[in-house]
Amino acid sequence: MTSSLSAYQAAQQSQGIQTLLEAEKDAAKIVQQARQYRVQRLKDARAEATKEIEQYKQAKDQEFRAFESSHAGTTSTAQTAVDKETEEKLQAITASYNQANDAVVKKLLERVVLIKPELHRNLKKIEA
Image 1: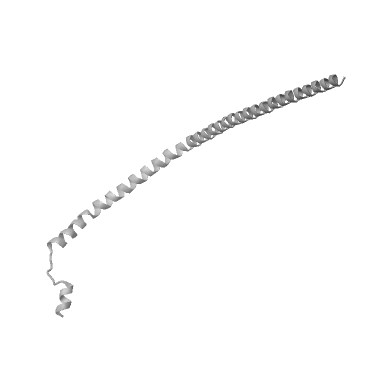
Image 2: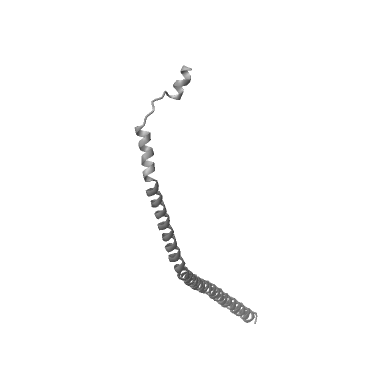
């Protein structure tokens, strides 16, 4: 009876060990599934973040285009005003040139043609 009792205990221990091994396998499967779930959640989060970034980028690009188109008329108006102002200034400069041209040429010719010989001012100081 002792041998059958010890065989029974050995069978129970073997069965207990088998149960522990199965539980360990189940735990490993659960851990692996948790890891896969976590990796999948990270991938999903990245994809969602990329999608949100792209939507935000498109919204800002659209906003910029709207701003640009609303101010495009202002730019052409400003360019027209600058061109007009430049033309007016150019006409004023041309008129001033035409008006003073003869007087300037006359002064230049007087300076070049009419020469008054005199000693240099440094030479005068030495002689004195």
